[in-house]
Image 1 (tube, rainbow, N blue to C red):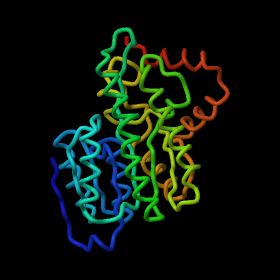
Image 2 (spheres, one colour):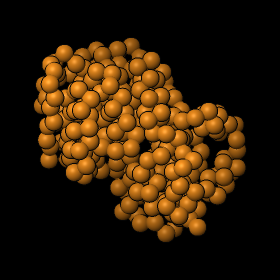
Image 3 (cartoon, one colour):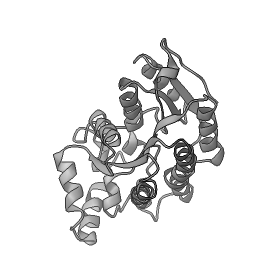
Length: 270
């Protein structure tokens, strides 16, 4: 299901960006970054909310193209890509942002929920990346942002499948970056820390430390840092305040059991 929200102006004179999971949270903030810097934006989302978000983007003076689909299915990912290519314009930038979490002890969580997480965070990312990379390499130009997480740098007990899925995303982005370095296409990874979005609530983690948004990083700041790093061609950036950035640095040398215990204390349901 798709719809188009248009604004005044000449779309052909502006570059086009796509953002998966662009209806809310960091994804919507990334879409706003593109819009405020003169990009038209195509966004995907699973609910009707994606159409309201497109109207918000259109109010920034650009064309906004919303697509509703399930990012955990082949048809949902392929449908969004077909929708974008049917616009008949080259994709200048792509933020592969869509992702979900599942909180709770692995022994208790539902297998279907975790397989859906893998389908969205891993399979769907690879699927969309394949389309975007081939498109951009053929044109000799483009910028790709893969949204990973600081969770990629530590074990994540009580988010036992989420963390590894984000570690995949980080490694995938760095690997692609090296492959594409002579093609005109750059790849950047964004590793947000805990961010004030609906992510942890949607992951069923309201009864943990992560259920409280008051102490988390600002999603607008995180998106700005990701956009700036993308435009600069950086290999990766940690999204958040100085404490978040230092935590990511410390994770490089902290023993895995120590990090696991620290994460468990924060993520264990009360």
